[in-house]
Length: 66
Image (cartoon, rainbow, N blue to C red; front, side, top):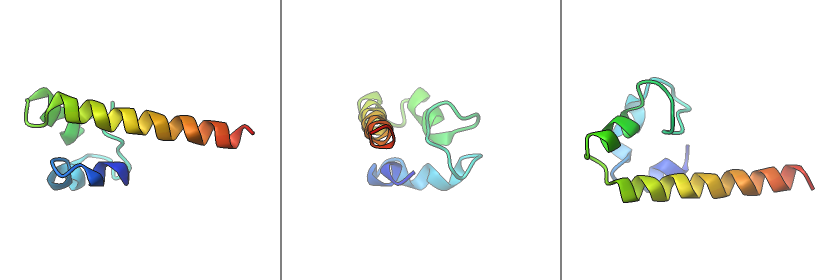
């Protein structure tokens, strides 16, 4: 959730998602993914966001399974 706050183009949309813990990937009625689909957020920026999330999840996985 915190990662999305670092993307300035996401910030105005974050409180509009259906779920307050939305990771802006596949949740229904996510305004961030809708903005990407409508070319209101650049796909390259969204891809960077997803890449950061993936890296965080991978680190978390390895930390939990030491």
